[in-house]
Length: 124
Image 1 (cartoon, rainbow, N blue to C red):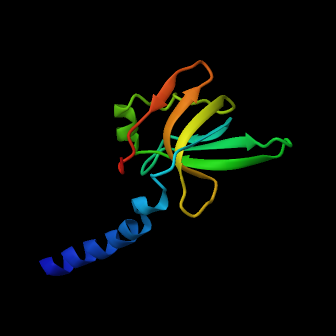
Image 2 (image 1 turned 120 degrees about the vertical axis):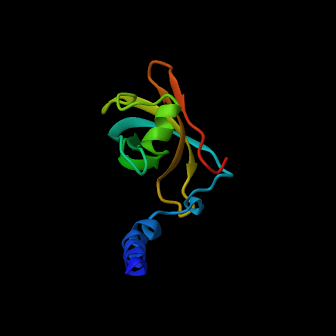
C-alpha cells in the first residue's frame, strides 16, 4: 500500500518536473542589451518575468520576454515586488534564447534613475 502511494505521488509530480526547462534554453556565451518600456512584471515562482516593449528605428514596437530566478533568489539579490514599474524605461542585459526568439535570461536591469539591479543566473 505504501509503495502505491509513493508511485502515485511520483506520477503527480512528473508533469511539473517535465514541464520545467533546463538551462539549455539560453546561450550563456552571449550577452546582449536592449532598452524598452516595462509592459509586464510578474513577481511569482517559478521565475520572475519581465516583458519589455521595444521600438525599432522605424517606430514599430515588439514585446520581448525575459526571465530571472525564483522570487527567493531575486529577493536575496536585492529585488522586490516594487523594483519595476509598468511603463518605466529600462535597459536590460541578458543571455539570448538559443531558438532566436526575442528575450532571454535576464542578467541585470538599469533603471531610469541609474540604479542597477542584477542577479547571478545559475549557469555562470
